Structure formats: structure tokens, C-alpha cells
Picture (cartoon, rainbow, N blue to C red):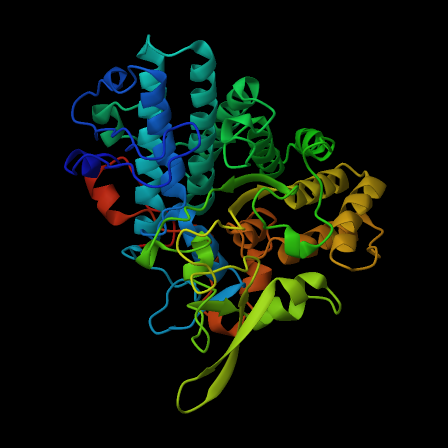
Length: 479
């Protein structure tokens, strides 16, 4: 099942960018895949080894050499599942048409395998910390908090994309091989518990990243927890968590210009993945999503923006002016203009190898917290507070205040701002359509999604996993 594959693989070699706590010329500590048992205490003989193992998780999140999970996969393929993106090469595409079949490997290879691989590694780190005697309590707290955030982050996407999935919290191979699916409520509770624990032990500043916003801290855990509370309809808690970040004005503020939001260490950034300036060849990108969008001149993007998204922008919206770009492509028989996301400006063709990057890959940012709080306030009938948060986002984009007055209209205004503000970011649109019950109404009327059925809101459980683990059941609709 989940880890049976890992047991026959070679050791997971954790490579990539060495985070600030480690010496950049060293290799990451390798965590062996499980056999019958695993003694991770040997990995963590001292703080340097433990930090090195943690560094591997960070490195893999921005490892554009493998198209999986944290390198833009979620953004692109969830965007295609929704109404944001279309592939340039559409022949046989099952994602944008929502016609996935059970044997489709795209989300198995892009989400399921890497997510459970990462979760195994987080569990190994946590168990190694527990048994280690050579690490100070302060370093243990730091690593435990960051690792639990990672585990919560991976579980968040698994439960939202696949529904009921196995909840894996240890490295016991025999148990995990036959793990049943846990109810979504149980998975969300585990996510909440991990994030609360992370909050309680992580620092409030960015000292772990030498002042750069590239390491998980209390605020990153708080931001993801606010999102989780919103998704589970705990609106008072969602508002409280989002407010704590918005009120931390010494650290966070919306950038004056939308153009500055995605710069490295911008005041809007809560958490970013650090870009490695020394990568070359296929791995050499200013951001993870550059491989999909910011193509060479006269070449089409691999995925481009849909007419539905383009039509959703209001006139004068600076997000349309600054966060979109286009390319004219001549196929030989016709010439077409393709629009693509341009939140990140610097790509392979604009930066020399070794040059200091000016952008990092945004994971969590302040604008989402305003929109979380706006939705939570509207649900709690604090309409004036919700309007104030909506206007903060609209005004930064050069738009006038919202005209929404009623609760229904305000919730609609929040949904519109989430669509425009968070487009092509970590699958927000796909997840929003599903959690608000709007997926059918929105997607079923799009011509290229003519085969839409409601069961397609969840992706299929990989059949190969079901063969390995007879306790797994397929999501309805897939055969």
C-alpha cells in the first residue's frame, strides 16, 4: 500500500537547497524507507543531523526537477480541474474535462505518492526527535513544530483532493500497509492538532531563516490553521486566527502595489519556498511555476488562462494588468494569443545562473487571511467587518469599495475576490468551488466540461494502492 512501494525503493535521497540552519556544502541526511522497523534515532545523533533531515523537506518543495506536489503541480492541475487553466496540448486531456478514470496516474504520481512519501519522512523525523538524547529541547521544539506543519500541509491536500484517505502518523510498516481510510473529520482533527502544536512551540519571528520568510514559524501555522477552520465552518476560530496575523502589523501588511506582493520577503509573505540560484538546466527556474507559464518568446505556455477567468476581471483591476501576460503563437496555420499567469516575473530566460533571485515561491500570504476573515465575518453576520476586509483587497487592486450589502451578496463578493486574488495559486479555486457547493453550478455549464458529474469533485483512489491494501475503497463514480 502506501509504504509498500517505499520498502522496495532505494533510500530516499534528500537533495536540494540547504536551508539557512545548515552549511550549504553538506548533503542532507538520508532517511531510509521502512522495512519491518526503523531506528531513526541513529539519524538524529545531534542537532545538525536533525536539521539536515528537515532541510530535505524544504528542498523537495521547490525541487522543479520532479513534477510533483509542491513545485506547481497543485496549482496547474487543480486549476485545470476548475475553470482557471487549459493545457495547450489538449489531446486526451482528462483533467480539464473532468473525465478522469480510476487508472489515471496523474494525481497518483503528482500528489498521492509524493504526499505519503513526505508524510513518512515527517513521521520518521518526529520519532527520531522523540528518541534522541543529543538534541537540545529548543531545537527539538523548532524541528517538531516545522515538521508538524509539513504533515498538516500534506494531509490538507490529500483530504481535499481525495476525501477519506489513510491517516498515517507513524512509521510502522506492518500497520500502515493495511491502513483503512479515515473519515475526513478525523483527518481534519489531526491537521488541527498538528498546527496547534506547531503554534505552541514555533517562534513568532523569522530568525530561523536569518530574517528571510523561508522557514515555517508560528504565523505560518496560524495561517494554515485559519484556512482549516474556514473549511470546517468554525468561523469564530477562523476569524480569530486570521485577525492575529492581520494585527501583527510589525511583520505583515498588504504591499502598496500588486506587483510587489510576490517579491522575496515581501511584507505580504507569511511563508515562501526559497529559490536556489545555483540550479542549472531543466531545474533552473526562478519559481516553481515558471516551467508551466513564463515560456520563451513566441512559445505557448504549457497551460493558459480560460476565457471564463479572463472575463471575471473587472475593468481597471490592477491584478489583470499586472498579474497576467500573453504571448502570440504562430502554429503555421493560424496565430493565437494565449494569456497566462504572470504573478512571478522572472523566469529562466530573464535570470543568469547564480544571480540572486528577486522572487521566492509564495506558499501563504496575507491577502488570503483578509479573505478568510471576510468570509468568516460574513457567516457570523458581521457584515460591516466583512465589507472592510473585502475593500482592503479591492482598494489595493485599484478598485472601488464593494457595493455588496446583504449577507448573500457579501459572501458572493468574497467568492469573487478569492477567484481573482488567488487565481493560479495552490488550487484555491478548485477547493473553493467544492467546499462552497458551487462546483456543479459553475462547471457543468462550461462547454468543454460537458461530461461533468458531481462525483468528479474527488479524484480516484489509485487502483494499485487498493490492490496492495484491500481495506481501501474507491471513491464513488470510479470503476
